Image 1 (spheres, one colour):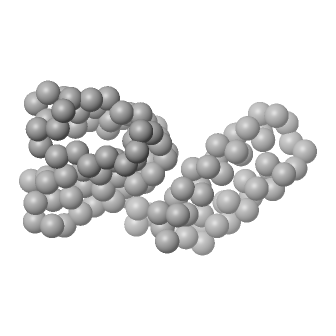
Image 2: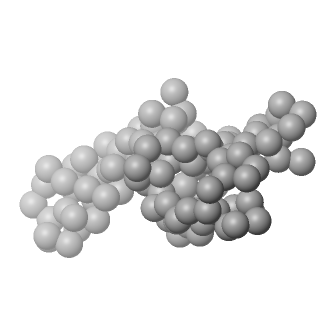
Length: 115
């Protein structure tokens, strides 16, 4: 049974417990932590999305991407950050630079979570 779910809402980090007020939250890139009553927890990294708390206390998270935190390698993330920084600082198309800036934001957040 679940005890709490912590989410990276745009309005700030939130802990969702049973009987939480119904709400809809936009999620920023970050860590979702699912804490079980037994004290165990699972961690996932999301690139963003939405969380909906229903009146019956159920929580739905809709995200484009979400992966277990243990699936990530800190070294691979560092390498991807370096590649994105080259594109942002280079002379690529406006679209390439804009996409690299978004990628950089997500990767830097992931890197901070992995530390």
